[in-house]
Amino acid sequence: MTLSSNIVADRLGASRRLVIKLGTSTVTGAEGEVCLERITPIVRSIVALKDEGRQVVLVSSGAVGLGAGRLGLSRSRLNDLVVRQACAAVGQSLLMATYGKLFATHNVKIAQVLVTEEDFADRNRCQNLRSTMEKLLKFGVVPIVNENDTVSTAELEYRGAGTFFGDNDRLAALVMSKLESEALILLTDVEGLMTNKDQGNVIPLVEVITPELRSFASGPATGGRGGMLSKLDAAELAMRSGGVAVIASGRRSDTIERLFAGEQIGTTFISASRMQGKRRWIAYAANVRGRVIVNSGARDAIVNGKGSLLTSGVIRIEQEFAPSDVVSIADAEGHEFARGMASRASSDTADASTKKSAVLIVRDNIVIMDRHMA
Picture (cartoon, one colour):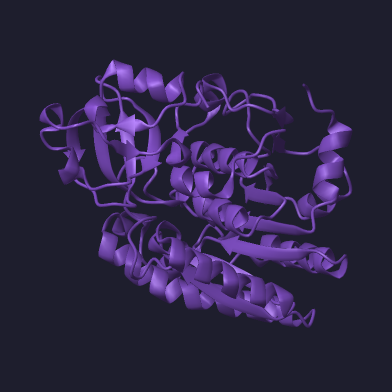
């Protein structure tokens, strides 16, 4: 089924809770200063959304860039992880001071919420985070979320697919998913997902993120760790959460206003399906702590037969894990096609050929990760 632009506008307009994410290129200027020209109208738009009865969470990058600007450091100095962490510590206070002044002119209170990937990987901490955010929203506060870069290196240092926030794009999607928000707005330095980076056209509507669409995405954005590919990953999580995601320009002062007035700008991502909350946590929020290689029979049973993973189907363990850890499930060629929450420790699979086969991961705790199979 192809969704019409009217349905998309209705879904976005009906959203009562949304997450807005600002990238580094939107927050900072050319010299590493706060770009008030871009941030001020965005704050006004957020206040207008609140006045309409909506709840808004703001996820903001820019701390590292602002800190580097205040310290007078060149971009080349930011290749050092500890330098980036120090810049984040300096820049975060500048970021919050700016937002505090801007929102205060509208009598809107804000709260700083600094998180690490562990806050989403641990289910208890994730629930505590949600409870705090829910209470802030109930109080009429605008939570301003950023990764705690001073203590966490997840955003600052690439450590493999699915283990970093990616200039807060993935972080924003995780917040949106956990709070069950209806919309995710990603504001960046381009008009949307383009068919060609330099001279292409904006793709207005996406219902399925295909390999072709991913080929249109480029590398990290200037001044930040994210890029269009990380925004596609964030949009995909938003879609699987049953919500709407939009990638649009943060350089235009009226982007948010036009979006909620029903105009078709940027790229909108929307899906008719929704993944259950626990399955989203397994697929996207949890740290992968183990990895198993399985035979073709086990792979077929999981992908086609909707079966559980048995110890007899395991060829080898590549990373050890404990019960309740999230495990990457890969085929004999090493391609990850699923993830699951283990029912038993990896040590229990030893010498499986001489033991009665047991369930390693039950079907309800398995999520197919290959996008062509999901």
